[in-house]
Amino acid sequence: MADKQLPPQVTMGLLPYLTTHTLDEDYEHVAAKRRTTGQDPAPRKPIGLVGAVIIAAFALLVITAAVQTSRNAGTDEKERNDLVSQINNRKASVASDQRRVANLTLETNRLEAALLNNDKSSSGLLSQIKLLSIRAGASKVRGPGVRVTVDDAADADQNPRDRVLDSDLQKLANGLWQAGAEAMSINGERLTNLSAIRHAGDAITVNFTSLRRPYTVMAIGDPNTLAARFSNTSSGQAWLDLQQKIHLEFNMVTDKSMTLPASGAVTLRYAAKAAGGTQ
Image 1 (cartoon, one colour):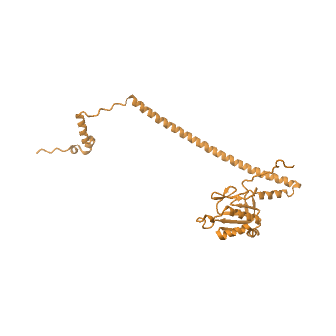
Image 2 (spheres, helix red, strand yellow; image 1 turned 180 degrees about the vertical axis):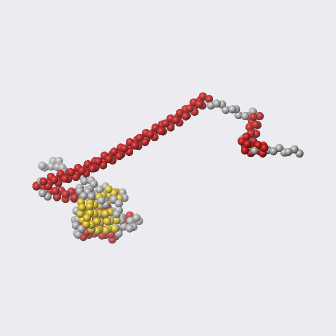
Image 3 (cartoon, rainbow, N blue to C red; image 1 turned 45 degrees about the vertical axis):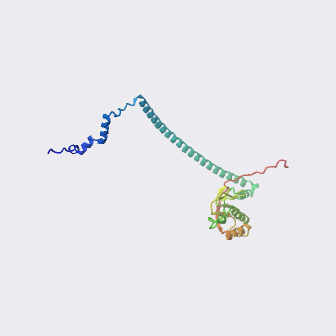
């Protein structure tokens, strides 16, 4: 009996067979059938001149877009650097102007003091100007007094009515003025005769600046009598009721030395003769 013929995978080796027979036999069978029936697809035509022009135009668009993107990136970086430079220059200019204003203010005060001290007819006038400056809030002041801290009740989150209102701070400030306070501030905002304590949205504002609780009122005056006199005022009695009924927090302590800042915006106002008035 003749030897059985071995398959090509055995005689050629598996790797050479796979290399030479990369197309599956089923696909090869279908392709051979198409060729015998005349269904073999015609060979591809070259892309021609129109196709080449289209490809070249597309390539040109891609290159142009890349170049434009690169130029825009450079322009954006330059504009950003210019803006940073302008901001830094403006900051330096503002800082320089602020130093100049501070120096001119000091020089003005020095010249004013020298003029008044050298003028015998101005005896006591300098002291009066300083006192008026303190009362108007135009200059900072240092001295003893009382420090009052007030805050919402413990259940204020559940009951909004148990919060410190602008009217409560108004009563506190008015009571301290009545008790003999010479200067006052709330959370660092100096109070003057033009200051407004009021609600704006959900915050209390002083001098149009929003404050955050707790509220600290610093009042310069005689620490030995200021607290007692305040408790005897109607405002002091009102705050006693707020403590007992609403449970607002209230704490007053004496302080031997406190510094109050000057008001940030002092507006000068002038009187003018009414039309048709007498000379």
